[in-house]
Length: 268
Image 1 (tube, one colour):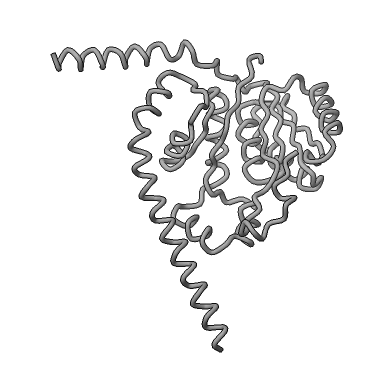
Image 2: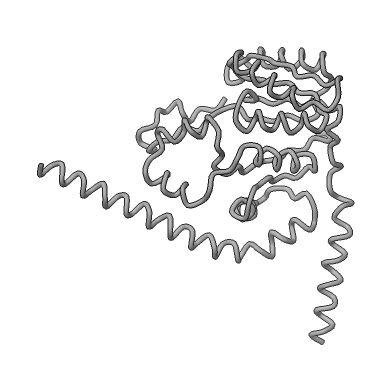
């Protein structure tokens, strides 16, 4: 009886594996595709643009700094695979006037065709203690369309360097428990997942575990992915509890050091 149940389970898993490609989105072919990258003048955004350009895409770079845009354009153009590829630069602040953003995207579509992939990399991380942050920091202004949510790890970018300038000690120590990734590595994974139509994009074992633990009501790309999330959820939650215990220990040690320092300063 046990052998029969095991055979049935194996057959069921194999059936899911064979059926899953039937419900998966059709992969996007990058050769000749129009890819728009906001925040494309530096960091992960620029590396994603380079990765797409290497695969034959036409690129529209959107960022605020015109000098950085032109510099990024020259760097991206070095990776062309044919003489028809184009890199279009648009200097605009996507956080401001929406009508202006809409107009420049229309201009880009007139020159390079409809947008096949939109990569939103504009923005930066503001680090600091919750009570020290300004209220303004928290303000945020269907058909055949797929969304990919990326969980990039700490990445060696100008934005990450800026983030570290104001990062509290606790956050920095927690961040240092894992290695810093190269932006080219992160970009390659994001582009790969976006082309395949995957909803989640993660890098490394920690990233995969995070995407599984936070899946909630998120859509799945395939039955296999959903099955993996169901099977691994309990194990990943157990591992996460050890992570949380370690992080909590770091926070407590920092708090004790800060209290000792304050006492020492008062008695000095």
